Length: 384
Length: 227
Image (cartoon, rainbow over all chains, first blue to last red; front, side, top):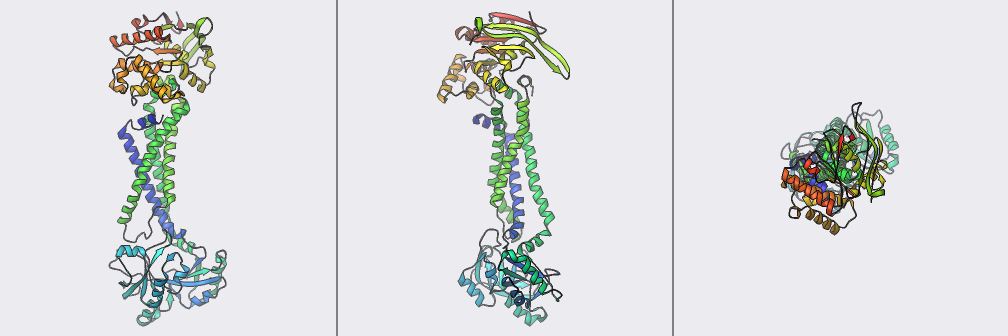
């Protein structure tokens, strides 16, 4: 029976090949779109449940006084407070994009345990004021090594800034950004006190680690109450909500990509369905002959659905094999650092395989129904 | 397999109509016929007389509106679709006018098709196929596809496929209708041999008087009635 399925699938080599190619392209497109969507959401997925972000209530772009740090630290339920500041700047040229952050060197790696750094390198980072820690992706991209001097031209904070690499962090899991450039906030603040004193003494946002993940709502409320009616009111939310706030700006695009990824599956279902309908129509007489010989409806179902599944599986397999290089190619086309994390999640592969199987099954429904419904005498009289 | 009095096929008071939209077109009108075991029966008549319909009823690929068709003691009109499929696989061999071989399969694989529905071992299947192809004189063409065979050879492969399971009856619908004179004569010789040497009961529909000469009995159908 399997031999007949294979021979039928290869009966029109060009037609089958084009259908298989179509399915493969659809699988690649599906995986690519799903991966982009996954990457957008990866920040949310790795958010810690017990981390809060406190920012300026009016907008994220306005800073908060450094003096808030101790007050937040005294709020009931708070275990540890850290902070960070967006630095911006240009390394080599504008196309070289990666996040550059001024962070609290004493606490940052405590509240972000998913950034793995050796104790020796952390101590070195803490010892030297203009030290920096780079993600392993930047090491791969630029060949940074311990002791290198990195020069960045400031824009938000004008001037030439020099940093010395004292550590390299590795992400604990693939979804964590491996391309951050982290340096000490006190180095930034020191320069500001000299060059622009009114801008000194501020941080971008606070990262608050709570003792109990279940109490984050109350802790958030308590922090915001603390600074209510002050000159810099705060908005405290979970890290997940904070990340979602960023993504919300692109939600329509992401939703569209999500939708399109499934539309592609629908289209390829119609393509394979059309192929199977044409094939089964051409073979109406053959199926009638098989019924005459004694083949049952179940056996014909296996024959037709088997052919459909075989084509879908070959297309799906080809698509999956081509997906990995396609993802690499796509990432290479993007500006450096545009997607700091870019990987195919196992669920995407599972979805693609499921979709290919589903396409095979659904595409066989109409031909099977038609074949089983056609009476033998009608089938034998059929002229295709 | 034969029923009482050596009758293997018994068609009793069968009526059959087809419908074109809502218009009823009677095809068989109160037909009765008995076929003894080992018979070679030819059904003749003009186009539309109902001979192929009668053949289809005997072969169990169509059902009568009224009456019964008993083959080998089984009223096949009363069988369910799946029972009928199994019954056909076991008891009926078909030969069609246009051979109806699967073009993607070799002669060997085409002949093997009915055996896929049996529990025979691979070796036994191979022996059966080889025997059937030898019987029709095509042992040397078993790995050729239908497109590589002449019409007469294709029809011989179809006959090998029909007999490979050693069915109770052999039905042939215009087996020489698409063949030249020489090939037609060869096919009729083959059917005659199957009837005489292997005692196959054959019911054949034909327009060709030369083909009908090989039959023991010739019955004519005219407007749905046997004459």
